[in-house]
Length: 386
Image 1 (cartoon, rainbow, N blue to C red):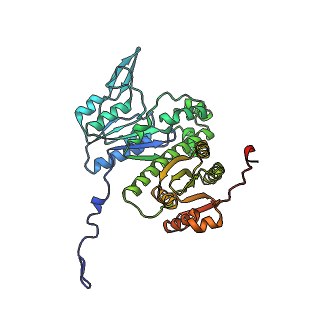
Image 2: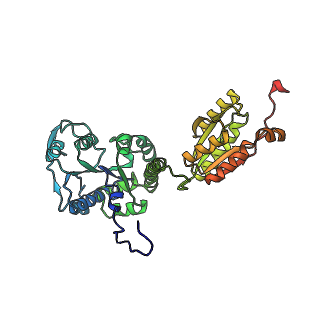
Image 3: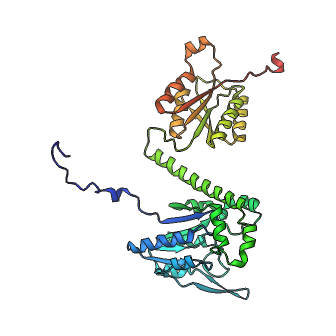
């Protein structure tokens, strides 16, 4: 501790290096399509690590005849490829056994979703070789296009009309310690294609009229951006939970609708869903069980079905005080807006038992969460009630 008037001669940078997390063991460069620069980014990162003293080798890189990619290989050690004969033709594949025998600190492996030629090595898929490297303690830097993710491939086929044969399970991609998006606008990619920087000249006209159409590239870019945004969102929520951050970080909108099980709860959920759609926000539907709350099971089941139909995640929690339970859920899930249906209690009931809506407003204000109180629509009486 430094006393007043005394100089603090400690290095202000002390401890910063320890506070910065080291580069992950598995780093992945993700792109919307071929030609965005994933391979060059991987090679540049490999060279940076080599300059800093890491033992780096190239397990496999496919240049596709691109001069800039070939230049980026200069100065890096390359593990010799394995030549395999298959159906009367010769193919070159990564020699996974040679990489494991060489045992570098870091290996660069292009095209994570690649299918190995039968009989060429240990596994049918290249991502399986990558998992072997990681299990052996070797850090991996790799590349992948978004269309090769299993959960996205079918959508890409429908959008582009092109079959996606090589696929990688989502869990493999999500296992990466770091996912970095290598982005490029559709216009820039098409210009690069036209200038012969992606495919050989003979393939350019068909590519520009097919897979590399403007609308296809726009859709692929959005898929890639959303995937990386989802990953970043999960990392942020995990950080906020682990560090018990006491206030809401408004990095994106997150809505929560309180479901009481009243006959018109479905209408409140639908209204909240429209609000969430306008802001492209995720929506949580939350029902609180408590001694204070009286629930119609049929109405609650209907509200749950409506919640699932509109794409909301369903949650049932228990709390002595429904208002505190709702706001506690909102704080834990970094909810930025709470949607409530207006109270149906009489003025006397409100005075006797207190208003849940009023308590939510008070508790939410302390957490910095906005609250919307939705007017409940009149429900016509059932036939047997007339």
